[in-house]
Amino acid sequence: MGRLIRWLVVVLAVAGIAFLIWQKTRAKPVEVMVRSITRGIVEKTVANTRAGTVSACRRARLSPSIGGQIAKLPIHEGDQVETGDLLLEIWNEDLSAQFAVAEQEAAVAKAQAEAACQSAEEAERQAKRAKTLFKNRVGSQEQTDMAVTEALSLKAKCDASRASVQMSLAHVSLARANLSRSRLTAPFSGIIAKIEGELNEYVTPSPVGVQTSPVVDLIENTCFYITAPIDEVDAAAVRIGMVTRVTLDAFRGREFAGKVRRIAPYVLDLEKQARTVDIEVDFVDRNDFSILLAGYSADVEIILDVHTDTLKVPSEAVMDNNTVYVFSDQDDTISKRTFTAGLSNWAFTEVVSGLDEGIQVVVNVDKPELKDGVTVLLAEGQP
Image (cartoon, rainbow, N blue to C red; front, side, top):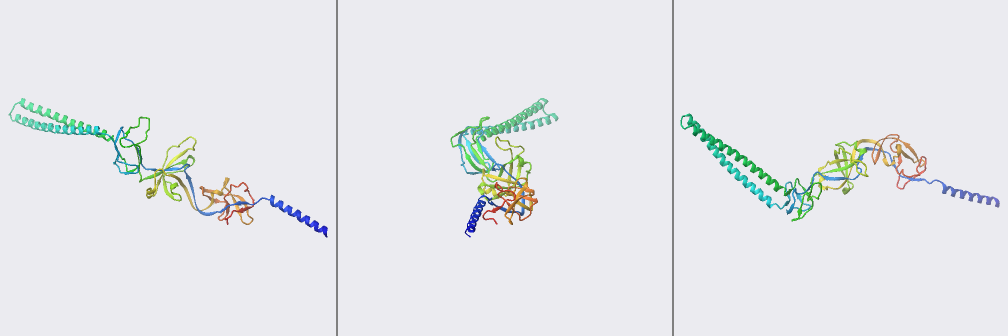
């Protein structure tokens, strides 16, 4: 009896040790996260490769066309200006005087022309009388010829005086143009973004081939669009008029409706960067302009195609060759399955065939322990 008990103890000890070894050496279930295949909308989209930029429809970096001392600077950074408003004026008393002289000379030339032309008109009338009297045998041929010659001479002086008036007016235009070069005016309505200069400072125009900072940076604040680079691989599918979704870092969680308005006609090749094609996107709702600022970073998602009410699987679950790991809740195992895919984006991939609605697939497929037939454990919070 004692021997039997001893053998029983030995057997139990060996079994316990074997169980412990099995527990230690057996493969532990892999913790996975699963999502169900559902029906809904799947879109084929492309997005910018680097951050895009919100740009003003018009932006002008302005400088006077002549150098000189700043005599008037009625603006400040942040001011709203209207088209034609004076932004800056260079000291121009000499040019103003030249303009005044040109105007006076034009006035004198006009008066002289009027006097000359009135004399020519009177001489023409006298010549007509002399011709009439000569026909009626009153007066001589010599007197008639002198009257006609006088009329022609004064007519020529009238024409010369009128030409002199036109030349004087040209001088006025030249003086006005020279004067206007000393004044910088707003070409459109907008906001003064930056001023490089102070009252009484000297400014000089940029020499040929040398770029200098503009004196005034004017930005239109009532119209904006987006420029964004698209990878050359995706650019061929983009068309003008395609609908886009725009997101801005400044307004997280909000989407802005957009539409492609321009595709650059060339590929941009920058050193150490992928080759891209710049596109421009218009905001559909002009009411969005009130909250935008030029320079905001933006991301653009272009919708190439849309399928509605179709089966879709999370794109993070899809591996190479359109395979997924399907979870079986009957024995807590996974099996690899291949399906036929349709449209795809970063969020969902369309299922054309090979998978059914309601099937659960593994989404954290980056785990190296995953393989066909392995036992898994659903992560906390999973159904």
